[in-house]
Length: 478
Ligand code: NAD
View 1 (tube, helix red, strand yellow):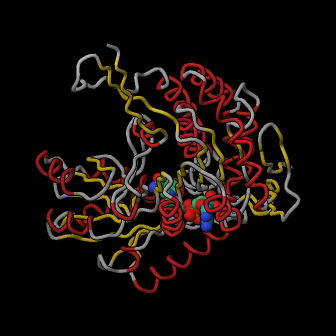
View 2 (cartoon, rainbow, N blue to C red; view 1 turned 30 degrees about the vertical axis):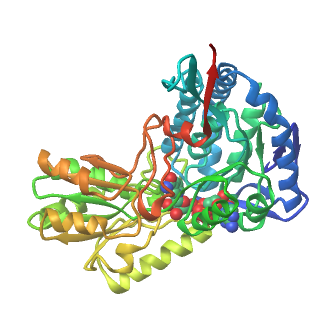
């Protein structure tokens, strides 16, 4: 059975503390592996290893670091099937999507490998003659990376690849619910020419090793993705210590469907946004705001398309969605389903009769609540979506923005003018027209507005800004 391990410097070690058995959320009779939780002194060891490795890694040329990233990409390509199968078994993401996620990880590594060779500074005219003034980027130093379970491969890579190409060394703390996948990913990377200590892995409970990691270690930067509750705490600690940080957090994303939308094209995109990965994406469609006049036609097609959704064991390649990831997720999402049954009207649900004991929650769409209702305001992070009927475009946009979050928003229309207005007015970092709310492109900036983010961006070249700092240099040469 797979066991989690820490990787600190050039050593693999199994902490002798508490253990947790990982059960497959698709079939709780199946044990996938065992997780060993670290103590705070492991955090200090990781700091030493990352600090020791920093000088040599930072002094390599970006081309040399890029070479290592290419090798990591190749190694990951060789293990794609194996890693995707482990991740699907550990946290329940359907295998077809999980393979796509590992592929995205490979592309991210190649992309950032190549970014190393891009010019990263500029020459700026000086006020005196004979002066060459220019900027260059330097690494932050030792960076802490804290990741959630819902994208167990892509999120860690979209943080660690730009961190490494910029010359930082990394201490990575994955979610306890994706620690076997993290261990396997680290094994894949450690077998390349990545120097020891450049990437260190610490397995543990966030509330146990998070505080020593953030408060006692000499970190130079922190990149966090997870819930708004944890992210806000992380941001406060980092701000107090005056270290650079980014926090990407929750969402309550709306898909707005206007009267002129092509319903048959729109409905599958809305359902995909709401229910793929069992709604456990920060960019998942959680509110569907439909303009008056199209509501009954839209919901008729929605009911028909719901019937085609397939919930199955995550290793079934035809599954649209699998189980939710954990007991904690199951309990939380189930309580929202109970709330929906008692305070809203069930518009449609797809019931499945699966024989495996697993954390399965049938996808459900409800209506009959207003925009201020708990179901319209709180991040559910499961296969439950709410439909609201707005009187016109203006009200739909107002409701779309009536949330503390601001991660992703979509509009479905054939009206170009309204499309542009929406892209201007929607208060979200990711705004789209005739596309689902979920989905990101690794070469484009990604992140939220308002309560979804601390307002930096990940991925694309934006990540290079986060993982480096700019020096302004001047040379008097005559
Ligand atoms: P979480 O906040 O519970 O945990 C995230 C990470 O933080 C985990 O590694 C956890 O161990 C760690 N952690 C927990 N307490 C900590 C502490 N006190 N100090 C330091 N670290 C601590 O989130 P989750 O349940 O793993 O993930 C789901 C959440 O992530 C959802 O809210 C979702 O919207 C969000 N998310 C956001 C994005 C984005 O890019 N905006 C992407 C994916 C997921």
